[in-house]
Amino acid sequence: MINITDKSKCCGCSACVQRCPKQCIVMQGDEEGFLYPHVDVSLCIDCGACETVCPVINQDEPITPLKVFAAKNSDDEQRLCSSSGGVFIRLAEKTICEGGVVFGARFDKYWGVEHSYAETLEELEPLMRSKYVQSRIGNAYKKAECFLRQGRKVLFVGTACQIAGLRKFLHKDYDNLLAVDVICHGVPSPEIWRTYLEHLKYKTNCKTITSIIFRGKQDQGYEWKNYGFVVKGKDSEGKERTICSEGFMLNIYLKGFLYNLYLRPSCHQCPSKDGKNGSDITLADFWGIESLDSEFADNKGVSIVFVQSEKALKVLRKLQGISVVESTLKDATAWNGLFFTSTPYDPNSQKFWRFYKESHNMKEAVEKALYVPIYRMWSNMARNTFNQYTIGIFYKITYILKSMIKK
Ligand SMILES: Cc1cc2nc3c(=O)[nH]c(=O)nc-3n(C[C@H](O)[C@H](O)[C@H](O)COP(=O)(O)OP(=O)(O)OC[C@H]3O[C@@H](n4cnc5c(N)ncnc54)[C@H](O)[C@@H]3O)c2cc1C
Ligand code: SF4
Ligand code: SF4
Ligand code: SF4
View 1 (spheres, rainbow, N blue to C red):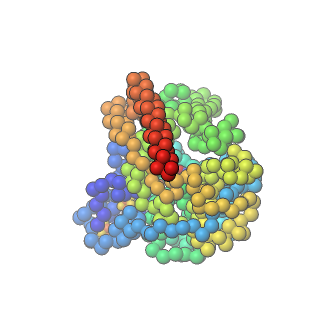
View 2 (tube, protein in one colour):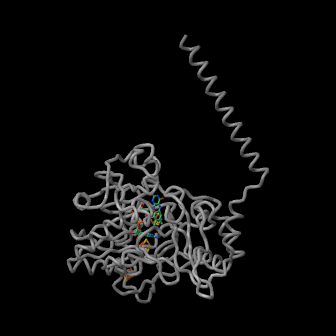
View 3 (cartoon, rainbow, N blue to C red):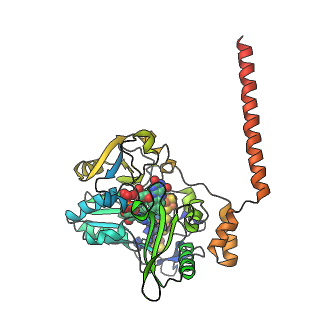
């Protein structure tokens, strides 16, 4: 029976909940807003099914991708509405046109994030773009299994641990399934997301939010590498306006996320890195493409496509509306080490949660957790300069000694 005593050992995929034959497991939020399974022991028959499907308990071996590509959608409008090169939407359209179903993450009516599915081209738009909040899987694995058994094609996209959970849940491969994960920095706390949105609405006198874009590009006045966070909303008279448009490092929510203040504990010991998740394709941002292929790079977004199976290779060969150039694992990961490793734990995160639990003011808690006093800034700078200076002297002395010994 699943019993979470160490939170870093649960990524919240809900595979256990969906597989339990007695339906005696529920996901419950903790004080940081992350969901964890809780078992009603009075109903449990100790069958062990929940442990068998857990991707943290049963981790795969790392694998090396068969091929690695740089890719971009040839339709610029679609690419600008995507986080990186717009590969997801091409795969999704192909699946729908072949009568299939596409699973991905979308906003719910309260602007939380949940997994859902699309059966028509019109239903795809909400699934596009990265949402930097942990999505609730709900019963998406069960629904996907149902479609797979009916023989319909299924494209399932999620974070690496969500794909690992899906694979363990299904227990066997289906020819009609294409599983796609995204390289994952980690997922921020849904509780902090909720508090941030409340604060934003209050500050801007906004009644209802109408759209949220985490990765605004040229169409929002930003670029792929210098993306912007853009939120629109309506005031009490029903007039729509932009209530937030900030570069990613100026926005307080994204800043706290990128400084790793409120990631899920499992993200610092991710069970599904390095190809350990059974996905057919991994998608990511091709950071550094301009130094490898300046003609292909254009700051509207380029994706890395890691191909992990022959099935995926076949699909990609037939995929239309995408330009690709072959790359290597070494080049593609030179600026994206998160393919292999987890985001390190930052001790400031402990400070953040202490401040947040005192005040429930996320902005203040981020600022306090990241605050460095002036004297510390000076002493850090002095220490760095001193280190560089002494390291320089050390190398010079070693060099002189070596050349003296040679003589
Ligand atoms: C939480 C998160 C962290 C990421 N961290 C990195 C990183 O560190 N480095 C990197 O190179 N790339 C990262 N990515 C991936 C990157 O942002 C793009 O999603 C990816 O390159 C695909 O882009 P696209 O243009 O092909 O498609 P897009 O249209 O941007 O499609 C994004 C796909 O991801 C799914 N998705 C969106 N939000 C979530 C979510 N919260 N949970 C699960 N699935 C979701 C959508 O349903 C869609 O299928 C991250 C993505 C997410 C969601
Ligand atoms: S052991 Fe079986 S019955 Fe008990 S919680 Fe796990 S899956 Fe459910
Ligand atoms: S990682 Fe997934 S399967 Fe394992 S305990 Fe957590 S929610 Fe359940
Ligand atoms: S970092 Fe790993 S554990 Fe965290 S959400 Fe991403 S895939 Fe899951």
